[in-house]
Length: 65
Length: 318
Image 1 (cartoon, rainbow over the protein chains, first blue to last red):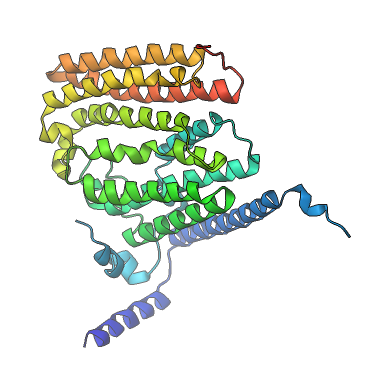
Image 2 (image 1 turned 120 degrees about the vertical axis):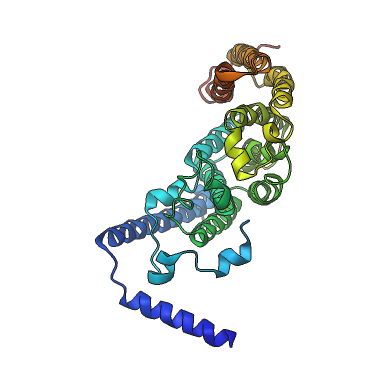
């Protein structure tokens, strides 16, 4: 019973979500959040790259060919 | 009271239940990180780094500092998630993003946990796992020991909980040297001893707020007079402790002068707080102590930064 009512709740929530039209203000906020998230992920990649290079050190290029 | 299970399973209000869209703006998420506290964390951690004179890659040191800041912000975010119910009834905190309805508790919880895990992992990768472990402990201490346990159960909440705010210099020193030395432990002790006079001065002014929220702050439990005495007692310990870096050799001449004058200023204000107990003058002097305590701590750490980071160090002893 509990799972049936839960499924009904989430089913309704999903239907509501699909039919809901965000207001211009909500769209703007979502766009800003997406940009911030993208920027954060970009910075994370840069940080991981910088850690890798810094940990390897200059000797990484100095190897016998 | 907030509970983890409720927060994880219950739709929090109509807006998110009906359309599933977050209502928060980027600035609201940033506010969850308590930017002013984060600045203090970065500042004290930076001083913990420079007094160590580390021989470390500056990029790795910068990333470590950034992760300590993010970890501090994450613990602030988790604190706001847990304390949303009491934030809503206090004038000082009711405009925070969760009580204001801009961000849902579930969002704040996910945001805080993600940043906590991310900051600890990246600090471990950038520096070492001792520093990462200390950062994880700091977040745990602030969120679980202070926010979830002590804050609502004992008037000693900010005394013991102050350890979390005092740990950043130790984390920073561990990040750049791989170990913990006396320098950062003394910086820890200064912040730890500074916390009670600082927060109790605020609590004297805002005791009505804390009363409404049901938080057992010292003025509400032991009374204003006992709080005033304890502010004075902690300040009597803090003023000489502020001079300790001079005797341990990492506080120079400029630091000695600043610590001496600042310590005397703190003592003078604490005595005034102890003496003036009634009416507007009592509130005013408590506010002055609160404001001066911020300036005092800032000046101590800024002087150490100038001495060690910019070559102004002139030894007092030897």
